Amino acid sequence: MEHEQFITNNPASGPNSKTRTEPFVKIIAIISTLGGLLFGYDTGVISGALLFMGRELHLTPLTTGLVTSSLLFGAAFGALTAGHLADSAGRKKIIILLAIIFAVGAAGTSLSPDVHWMVFFRLVLGVAVGGAAATVPVYIAEIAPANKRGQLVTIQELMIVSGQMLAYISNATFHEIWGGDTTWRWMLAIATIPAVLLWIGMMFMPDTPRWYAMKGRFAEARRVLERTRAKEDVEWEMTEIEETIEENRVQGKGQLRDLAIPWLKKLFLLGIGIAVIQQLTGVNTIMYYAPTVLKTAGLSTDAALFATIANGVVSVLMTLVGIWVLGRVGRRPLVLLGQLGCTCCLFLIGLVCYLLPEFRSNGDINLVRCYMILGGMLLFLCFQQGALSPVTWLLLSEIFPIRMRGICMGAAVFSLWIANFCISMAFPLLLAAFGLSGAFFIFGIIGIGGAVFVIRCIPETRGRSLEQIEHYFYARYNNTPATPKPLLSSAEKRKV
Image (cartoon, rainbow, N blue to C red):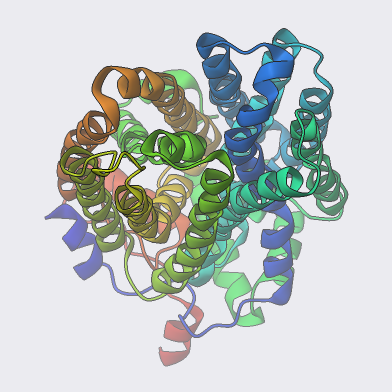
């Protein structure tokens, strides 16, 4: 298979796996992924806030769906716009702008006097969420050493699930301490704090060496490499970047019409497929509607909010496991494990809902059924957050060529958010029409199709520089017999 040839026909190249990562690149990753923390908090906080804002904002089933999904709709267009602008203005400037939008959106939602303003400011927040999803992984992927790229990019996923966990904890805490119908405003307002920290932190960060080189600013590109690489790896990577930039300069600036080129079109469709299958597992129905699902299963409001914290904790722990595993296992086997595991869990939840009665013989809620549903959700999140989600964002940040990276990443994440929007709008309708069991069975059947896509289409990219990955896809989709000979790493040069 072609993805196997990429492993066997390309000897290890790029930084030695034992090469140290300069501390500055880790600081860059942590600060920039505050955007991921905001991403997670703003998508997770609504699950609990919906239980309290309904009376004050006079929410109906339709407006409840709009409040939830308007962020996702805004995120789709935020990803598309930010991805395009990141190529011209720079990754750093776009992240700084997104931090301001995050702060405005968080403050606006917390002060909204009615549902119309709430939907508007959720759209504003969505622009920031989508923009961060499209820009931050690319920023980290372009600034990180090849041997640490997987682990550093997936810090973004760790921050997303950490933000969701913080949202669940704050929801339960605000309700427990203050209670009342206005606590949702504080739940939403607290997101302004990490937005300000992101804005301050990014003011002191550099842009990526690849973006500087793309703009002809090679001296600045070298200075960033010197701050983020071991000394022995700066020269070979700078040479590799310059050669790839020169190849792309001959082809001209990346534009939308370039997607008509057959090999770029295939690569673009692969990116969209990777983005969409992660959403088609139905993960965000669990993350957004967990309290609703658990209340439907029979738990009280307090119990549902508290139990939802377990979703956040498991997501964080399993993302840490996923980051550790990514340093030792390839992308392809991990995404396959995640897809198959999620699909099996969806069928498991559906069977529990179908086979176990909602009420016991004495008329009480069947708590065994409730906790088995919760257990199925937690097992699902083990596969989703420990394998599938981290690899999704990592692959999207790796596979696109440098001159098209912003455009393609923005369009792929746009597709992800549109799929998220459609599923989030459809889930309450599926719940009403088919019940819990039918809704989860439908997502399970879709998951089988996703597994087939993974087996047939997902390549292995571990241990290769972004330039070597670009050469590989060019060769693969043009049916050329071999990829260009990769540059030697510093370790291999020393052997020679």
